[in-house]
Image (cartoon, rainbow, N blue to C red; front, top):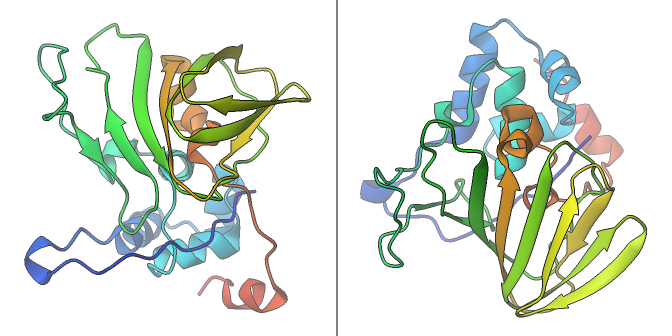
Length: 225
């Protein structure tokens, strides 16, 4: 199961405040008459972390939000919307960008999402120290380092990737990566659409941080009310 540490950033002013994600998730769960335990079992996200998310004490990555949305019977666009270009062209200064409230990860959406499209592509801005889970999933991925460094684990091997390096691999090969440096990294990520279905998105290591240990106190506070 996936746990994440809360990310913090300066609060926006009231006129530009972002929608509160946690209450929206809680409202949807209550509408479906589901307990935190039921959503946890369906999504693979721990009860403790779900509780933190609903209270706006933690912000999920896009992949983890996809797990939660899938368990709640909705798509990602139920909680997050990003504009899509009508003609498939994205200009550098007009590219659709988004992030989850208070998340350290930034996303630039390169794909148009036209009918029949089989690829999804993002530029990911990854903070120092970010570390992902070891995962497997359907489809395939290509990552290209635009800036910075990462260590990519693939099938038991570790590849230290620097600016300009690229790696193409099958999603069913166990893989994970981390940013071991003290500066952000920017990654061009492209994958087949099967990777980015609601369940598949949860398995993208670029979007799912490694779970820290959960304390006994946090487990106690996470009990469903």
